[in-house]
Image (tube, rainbow, N blue to C red; front, side, top):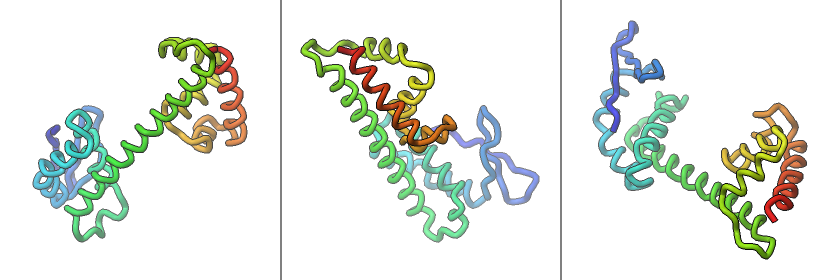
Length: 179
């Protein structure tokens, strides 16, 4: 578990959590004490939920979201809240992974629609490079970044319908290229 680097801030009773990228947030003395008390337990729980390699990221993300939540000051059972945050973060990570795997399988199904055996992932990457920059961005954000069409549209500044239309065109173009 990465060590928390907490230093007193000019405001009495508040701490700043510092990292190599700078100050992330301001925490109270109570939050720092709770973090130090529950950190090892939550880290073990994270490891049991996501495995040892993903535990630290899951733990950091869950605790950071909990401390930044507008509900945090009014939470009465903070231990239970933090455990639930870790659980929810693990569930979100699992769903995201499942969606990414499903998207890859769908893309491979497109490439296996011909009688030839499936090519390598390199073939898919080469095919995606043929797409226009806009289509490539839409495909990347949809399948690799796991965003929904409305989120892709917001990110790129285009309408959801345009995203859906370009995505359909891209799938058809990729299907032709991967045969």
